[in-house]
Length: 509
Image (cartoon, rainbow, N blue to C red):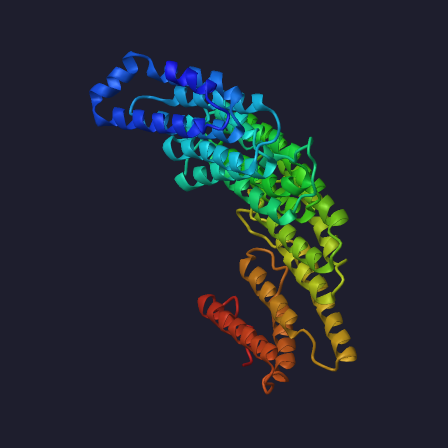
């Protein structure tokens, strides 16, 4: 102790850090030599006798010397076999105080040494233990933003590599404090941010979210963690939020699926709505649209009609106002119709409103071929196999209306193709409509809305249209002919299965 104190009185040009580091390394080898030496070290309180004088003389040393000394002390501390986490925290705290007391920005070499000090515990302790080090963020904040981000990335990558699950809300909060510069821009030192760098960092954070959950399937605990995550991610701004918030949404959605309590499910679904609203405002309307549809399915599965309707109407709103691209609109409407088709628990009024709106939008698509596909897809929405229709599975008159409208649009598309390009047009539309007619004809039981005569007329129409394609070498034409032949084989199978029902149909190869 006396020797350590005297080091502060040496000549200014003396390399004090080399002397102290050498001493600490000798002490480390001495303790490793035998258990008795280690016990002696503990009995005389040698750890404090090293740390206290160093803290007193550090004000007379330069940054690099202080960093080197505390790096050696930390190496010495973590090498001990006994529980040393409290001592590591003490070393980090004194290191932060010593370097902070010197003032000024750290030199490049001192910063690299300090980064090594912060990295060392990552290799020795588990992340959950590391989060108990209250002094760790204090040391991190001595580094510049670039170095701090590097350490934060190291922490996140270590969690992902080890698959560590963080299930305590307070430890999650500590983790967010440790990696705060990854979660939001530095308001005190604003700089222009590179979007590629942000994307790479935020993809790590998005993966990290999956590691923050209850290990005992405690839904309340996991939900509290995700609420904290949303609160922190909101401060990151649009550039970060668009990468991280969808992960929070999906994880909350998983909790809803697991939850058997209706009241809790409603609460989490309402919270989900606020998350997706944020995503929509980033703006990322197409991602928000898909999330609304996914939430609709889950709410419908839980028989929470009000929530399902709210999500679906939010999806409708995005479709109508925020997806201007023609191709994206076509794809979005197909997803919307598919989602509705998978729902089974809407009441009659809400259901009629939704499917009528979807059908109206189908005929507003720009391309006739897209209109046709959307309209014949909507036909399934009018054919419900719910509790009311379970016994009879009757085909609604509106199914036939949809199919006839699709056929009319297909003929319009064909006429436009013939007049503008001189070809036969989209014959595959007629074949697809034929398949829909066959499907509903096969499903109906008591009341025959779709008749065999309708199918026969379509068969004749398609046969005439495809006859001109058989001699073509065009790949698209060949695929159309193959589609037609597969349809004929399927109808032949149905004729064998139900000969009386399909007896009047005449097939032409």
